View 1 (cartoon, each protein chain N blue to C red):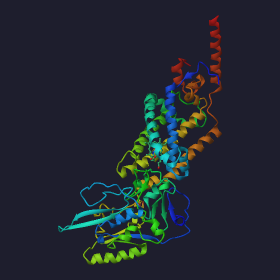
View 2: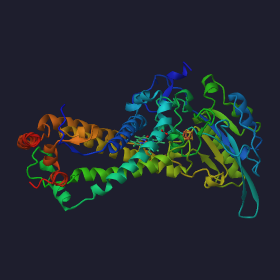
View 3: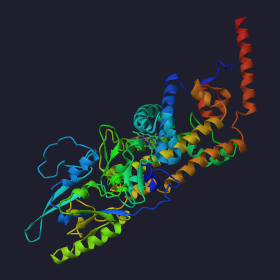
View 4: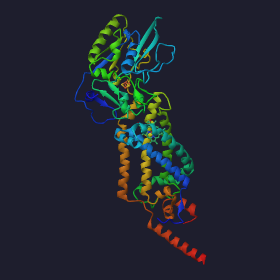
Length: 306
Length: 208
Ligand code: HEM
Ligand code: SF4
């Protein structure tokens, strides 16, 4: 990824700027949940393009298959049967996967330099060759997305087809979606398109239709059009106001440099204490006292031998 | 160095071995842990073969350390109960640090500072072991909220304990004639009388 390496906005565990002279267009994927028919073409396309296959699992009683994201399954359709107030049924199907947060908790938490990077187009990508398998990305992610592989102990997730996007292609899932529920383009264009969809939904009686582009994580590069944007929890527990957990912020915030300064001060302070106050030696009087006693005892021993 | 047969034994071989196992583990844990703590220290992972090896080994070393620390703490706990003269010593610790120990109250086998260190480490070890196990994704699966809290506690306890150990090591270097107590077990009578006079009297029967 020689050219892409010029487009890095942020790099995990790196305190100096990454190569970022180029600014690429900020992109986004828009998933219109109201237009999704749950065919899983996107899941299949993801497996095909990325050439990953999950093990064949077991049916858990719902359409979700596999039942969760895995290191080999970077997107999963989540099927939710929701009863409406008037006794009707809504089948809310959400394509789950990495949200490509503008302020990614995974990247913030990652201790391995360059294992997680964010391109200037907004895509958050894992570089598994630098991954050490600690799982901090899982701890940092507000959406429970990354998964550690049992095979190699590395973390995996959706790449937003960063390889395709780099050469001007849409992600595989967006390419195959038969209903146009998955759109891809500049973030700005996607927001405009979302507006038209939301207007349409509102006309059809979904008064709370809206865009899911949560501000708590600085917005996302995967957005949803939801018929019930006021209740994202209906869509398989999509968080209403996701943000990097305060715990993670404390853990990864200014406390670290402060703690390092404190430890450095303790070590340097010790050295200077020694240099300025000198060692804490046993007093000469006590040494002499013990010496005299030794002499006395030695003399006595000699006497006894005689 | 010629050893005086009348030197006093402070630690037996098994206590010394126990202490060094804990000490070596602690240093390895601090080096590998700091590597994950801040990018500035990440190169320390190379000491363990590779970053991934550092990540794999750290918790196992932790388990070894926790086990041997428990044994050591049980051995030394009784000698570290804090009494009145320890509080008195701690109140005057400023004088001691300033290099003047003439007015310091007489101390038993451990002085007030050593006892505070001991209990600080007991608390730190408890926190760091429990939180470390909760963060150990290879073996333990707990809700993410718990892992987040554990990560904060683990990093905090690590900084706290590394700070204590810096002081501990420095105190041993500063007080000449101390390190041999952990290397081959004995201290001179003069050392014992100067720094731990109550203990010195107990051991030697010397009434002065
Ligand atoms: C039973 C004892 C311990 C266990 C089970 C344990 C476990 C862990 C685990 C699982 C991690 C995450 C990285 C990894 O998977 O390797 C970690 C990180 C860390 N450990 Fe430990 N550990 C223990 C003791 C210690 C001790 C004694 C120290 C300090 C001297 C220490 C310092 C650290 C630090 C600084 C981190 C990085 C925290 C951060 O990312 O901010 N650990 N430990
Ligand atoms: S959803 Fe999770 S894994 Fe994806 S960018 Fe955000 S924090 Fe990282």
